[in-house]
Length: 333
Ligand SMILES: NC(=O)c1ccc[n+]([C@@H]2O[C@H](COP(=O)([O-])OP(=O)(O)OC[C@H]3O[C@@H](n4cnc5c(N)ncnc54)[C@H](O)[C@@H]3O)[C@@H](O)[C@H]2O)c1
Image (tube, rainbow, N blue to C red; front, side, top):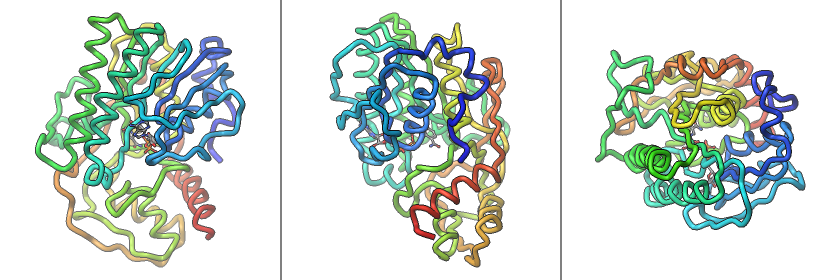
């Protein structure tokens, strides 16, 4: 599996930062969070406290290691004991189905949860990282692409995605306020579409990679919403985690907002065809109505991330093969 069997080369200079240190990771039992915990363990972290209410996460995602303690708590209420060197706030459901079913919980995680974790960072002097999203850019016009961090976004406050997009935007404002007024050493990563093993398939409008892969493996038609011409840029999870940790550990990143992802833009229909080919499925493709406010294009400008030494490495086909292997395992195929 493409995983953290070895520490990625670009993170090797930071082994000294990690060795024996105390980490708090909210959402650490989720998809990205559990890979991130794996990477920190591999880098020699002393102790990792995971705060996760297990709404979409699962303790089995986390490697069994005596250095990890999982607290089944909400990020917005949790008051963990101890001194932390680093706090990474990833807790939030991130799936379009959850935007419809759990909007209040999502806003709580991104607003109240961010505030609670920032207060803990202030109290303990921890370095802080907030997992924001490309969704803060909303549905940008073609001339705004590739999306730079300076782009203000075109977000609908009324649409079904607003609970997620707007609460991440508030989360970002909170981080900036705690940096300015409370001296917290914070930074913000805007994550673009990330995929890989351990991603949960949740609901009908779930995320496109697990949807296509699972549909292909069980022989159901692959559901494409709209024409399928809308684009996304898919990043394998180990690359996303490497980008997040570079932003956390690199000197001089206090206050930075950085896109992390892959800039290999493709249409959803192209993705469906690649999944069809890699799985060898006989499933066909069905087209359904595009959900409201679904972004038409997504492509990050990675110039800033590259100044930190970031460069996504995993090719889409290789990452998809790993993801297909994972779902074959859980679907018993
Ligand atoms: N996967 C992506 O493509 C992507 C893109 C942009 C941003 N992000 C952000 O990255 C983070 C992780 O996303 P993911 O893809 O791993 O999703 P995920 O659903 O797998 O992980 C989220 C985790 O947070 C936990 N959680 C949710 N609400 C909580 C709360 N109030 N308190 C404690 N735990 C809570 C869930 O149980 C889960 O383990 C999220 O903040 C998400 O918004 C992800």
